[in-house]
Image (tube, rainbow, N blue to C red; front, side, top):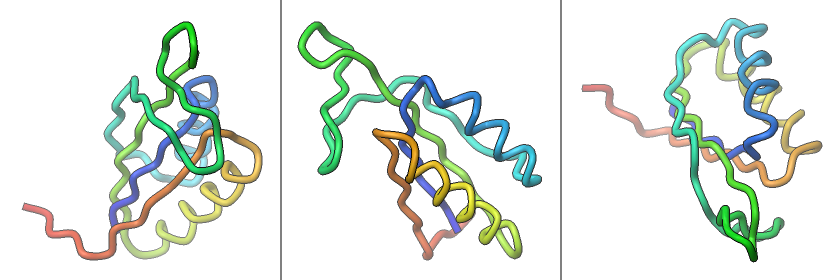
Length: 93
């Protein structure tokens, strides 16, 4: 299963540590993304909307899916902006 995770940039290292602690070592990181969510203020890295987010692409299988969902639940309660999207149909080529 592929997860797309948008996380407020100041929480990047904490999120990465949580992944490693649960044995999730593989991911792709896009270090600077902008956007507007439904539950948080926009982040555009400008004078009007300061700040930015990071985007993690994380592919996990088996028992790691549950471990990742635990991490995502924890961070979604304490970090804004934070949003995770799970894509069930993924073909690895």
